Image (cartoon, rainbow, N blue to C red):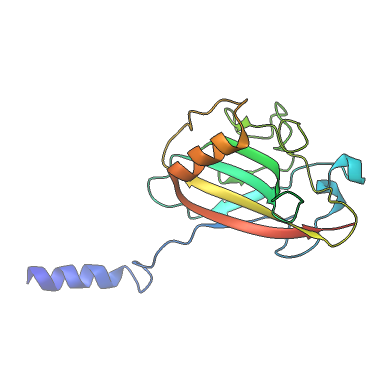
Length: 179
């Protein structure tokens, strides 16, 4: 009888009860493989340089913080970092538009933002050379630590090594920009 009761309880959970969670990233301001709006483009290319709103869903069990990166894999020299932010509190379900402006109050409290490829702290939007549009990969990482233990003046390589070491899962959204 015990076994029958267990079976009934499991069935009562529904058919998707044991489906694997899928960690996802979306944005009301970005669409997959679509052009990035001028609001999110770097000022040197005529934009307003506002980081887009990002939302993530279904982080894996054990997540204790998040990190966000934006990378242009099409840039000369093997790629270009537009944003690296980490120590984003576990209670965050995304980042507000403008969170890439350090000390603006748009990012959760203790979020650390590194210098990007332009040498500026925080988000700097797309600004590729004229020609073929570039891809911009927005990625959120679910991390197994509440703090990465990396300082705000660390190199991108140091921060990314720590992010990869502690990543439980990642989700990406790729958009494009060209001029």
